[in-house]
Length: 302
Length: 291
Image (cartoon, rainbow over the protein chains, first blue to last red):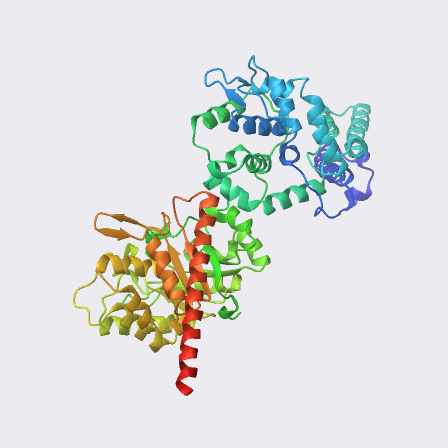
């Protein structure tokens, strides 16, 4: 209590270090909470939000997930093929006239000469189309709009910056008293990195986006079951939605094409996808309800 | 909820493989779940959605082993009871069979010896189960590939007495009856005529396949024409509250499954027509008798 009432700059070195570490932690938590709060709109109903498979994929894991979803759907439709040896993708057949605009964009970007998934992710041909997906999600405020993001990152970074400034001030006080300041310098550098991280890291979704994604996944639990148990029976739009909402691992295709595709979409660890993705954020994801009557009683006979 | 509120409803056994098809078929309002595969504390979301849309869901047990000469497992009973409550089920169903004895599980529903002694055991267990369950219990006849020697009565007499002594309802599996008629040379129509059809809770039908000289009720193949005919014959005698198609494996395309459901509805309709003609004919005869 005495410590809180006193001017922290007057605290002896060791006590200030303890105080400063605690302050850094608390400020980092507060900054994160402020950022989450400011990027999100006031709570509202998600009932009328209607996203397609690629918007769902973007909502779940960003631009790269949307691209991967379209690639997977096009491979499943035999419009793209994947090389087992090079993991390169290339076009296998033309798209029908009524194909989804995003599939057309991906199909065009892949082209006939073969590209890896990383190359496709970075392709300048893709960027306008993923931006279009993002635009729709921003309109619904499911992902942070640019204005909200600017305000959120600025305010939250200022919270951490204040901690850095306090540390720097104490460094000068310590130097004036001929006290050792090296530990404090290190802490200030750490606080600086945290400030930078707070400023740069953009939440993938708003609170509304989290709510919408969970709701979509809950509503599609039966689709998830079908994808896990009977993927070959799914129509293409259902395949797309299943991948968009739950990721490729949700589909239990067993053919070589699918295995090769999964390998192609998971490049070696040195390649970065750059997006925070969660392939399964719903509590119903992966929940098991068993098979049929075979649980201990064979074919039933009943 | 009174089980009689679902009249001549055609339903499907719920399996994860069929969850999407059932969800997208609003006309399916009667489903059954294998009780041992569902946790009351974690009911799958698709089932909850079906419940929200007003579907009737009946837990169908396979592990109670009502025919075993041992006390029933209280945990299994409690599971069945909790599931019935969570699903607002109008009843639960189980089998006239045993699946374990002396600490060993058979892994399959086995027939009971049709003796007075076995009937006493079965009756005692049914009464114990009824006392523990919050909803009525319906009992199903099983398909059997063999019969125990030394039978003191026919299956229909055995089942009828069990139902009457315990005042329970029957889940009549016409596919199982069809299988037993083929495998043991029973007269299926005599069987139907001898059953207390007023105790019918609902009906099962399923597919199977002949291998060698035996017919196997696999639940993994299309419904046989003979089973459909038997369903029609049943419906010519009584209007069943509901008929449930069971499919546990080698799931067909949605169109084929819907075709089977249509075939079931048509059999019910044909049977109902026969029944009304028969009622009309006997009414006319009665009138003529008084003239």
